[in-house]
Image (cartoon, rainbow over all chains, first blue to last red; front, top):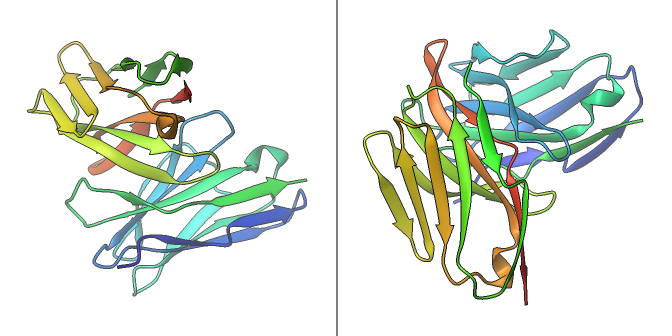
Length: 112
Length: 114
């Protein structure tokens, strides 16, 4: 049974560019949450998607947006990249109403 | 706003030693508390989940306790091994704006020396 799959694993972008990260949830999971983890820090909650809608959002600017598809997979988009956006981006899936989160291995984004 | 603090930030111990990692949180209105392990550059692996009504959970050499009223949790690792070297993250699960979310601490980086 595949867990959470994230792509790409690594990415290098130039300041000002736009990036899209992808996440396929674990089979049977319908809720996707995105986290940003800067070096040496704990993961910070970006937003959560359920039923193709953003249900909750952390303290991140509008440059961060997302989408969930009918098959529950999700995308995270970041516009106008800043050097400070360099981080490991983690996707976690869960079943609505459940506390059990399964995390992917993350996408390492480097902005130069 | 829920805040989670982990002490110490880093810990180095000789193989075989028992050790304790600490986690504290500011708002006791939580659903649960989880401990995760993170290897360098990797995702998170769930180790233990303690429901708010529970006092402790055990899995193999790991034991986690929860004192919700004082806002504290500890992760006890018995007979540490070099393979235990990783960053250990504590996360509290609570209701934020009507839906369940996790707030993490910054982690404790553990090195077990052979």
